[in-house]
Amino acid sequence: MDSKLFYKAMSEFYELIDIVYFRDYDNSPRKVVFESIDNEEKVLDLCTGTATKCIKNCKIKVFV
Image 1 (tube, helix red, strand yellow):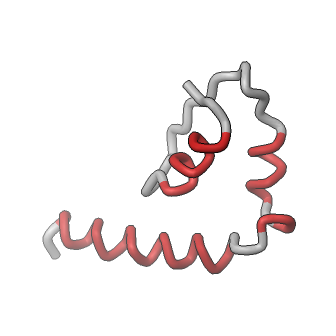
Image 2 (cartoon, rainbow, N blue to C red; image 1 turned 90 degrees about the vertical axis):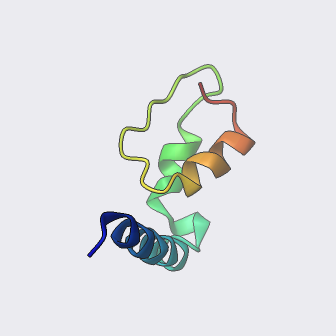
């Protein structure tokens, strides 16, 4: 399988799982991480995947 096609298929699958699994923000383990980061802190996300959550978080808080 072409690597570009494989990445596209896997990223769409990952996005679906991400939406379904983490749809309940109050019970999401990401809530604890997100809410523990102050606006003054810097974050480097090494395993950002498709960056959907990273982009969403950056719109809420200022990350550098």
